[in-house]
Length: 385
Ligand SMILES: Cc1cc2nc3c(=O)[nH]c(=O)nc-3n(C[C@H](O)[C@H](O)[C@H](O)COP(=O)(O)OP(=O)(O)OC[C@H]3O[C@@H](n4cnc5c(N)ncnc54)[C@H](O)[C@@H]3O)c2cc1C
Image (cartoon, rainbow, N blue to C red; front, side, top):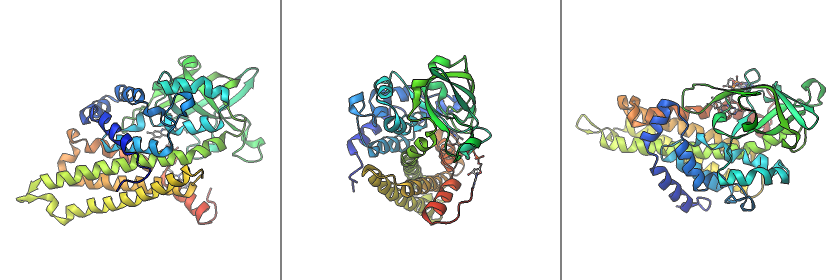
């Protein structure tokens, strides 16, 4: 049955676009840890990365369900939207809290594909999950801010023109709440890269264009502060539900890819003179993963429904991300096991997708932190940190 928010035309068109980027393409990028530039360009040219940008700025002006449909289809086709998804989930911060001047200056370029907003600098080596303990500072000097510090795991910084950056503008000791005194900046990295901004790639388990960044008296024009000084943590948090929803859609796409791949292989592979899929020991993990995926998908639809009705569904967005990441991981396990030794061979794509799917237990939010949110904010248990 087609769900009202499913966007079948978009799904069909994205699936068609993805058919030009088969497993061999992603395998090569993975092997070389290369950025999938051709894929991102095709997606941009088709307008999909501007899906959430309002029409007045040259975007498609579509709701988050359309963003979910696009990301899910990319993953369902065996690709990886991690190369470009940040443009969707950082967009909310700019749309909701950016000034009219900032939107007019940057959004048309992003929508047209001339500018990339793909980098999101929050995580730091020493603070980790405890975001308010971050140490990167920005101090005001006349018409600009001067940024010093370091970020880690900033994905796609080498392939992005712009970065949303969270930095401390008032020392933590002098603010009433530790969440105060953080500010968000829209950094135009083209101006500072190679000078006051150093970008170093990090080789990781999967091809994610991960980097670490070093800021050495990096100037940012005062006009590039997003919203009010000191309120940045709230702005980032308010975008988190959109991020959880969009990432959950990717996980659902992964789960569907693994389940389809495993079911097909289970039907084809003959051992002991019969298809391995005839054995319930092979069937059941795939059937269980499918059940988990369907339940997670329902929760995702609920989160989308509430979000598009104007709500800020923290509970549902977090549950959708948790359940979808678990479903994709269960499906990854079932798929690898179904393929036996061949699951480990590069040419089947299973081991690559397996590595990629593992990330969602840790980033962009780790499972523990979601459980902690549910325990505290939904179930009313004591705060643990
Ligand atoms: C490939 C990749 C890409 C990434 N891209 C970006 C990006 O673009 N931008 C960005 O800002 N960040 C990015 N990240 C960072 C990511 O968001 C963090 O890795 C993640 O939030 C966890 O932080 P940490 O690695 O510092 O772990 P830590 O905070 O050191 O935590 C380590 C472990 O301890 C657990 N833990 C910590 N505190 C608690 C607690 N109180 N209760 C229970 N468990 C706890 C965590 O859940 C985790 O499992 C990326 C990470 C990876 C690996």
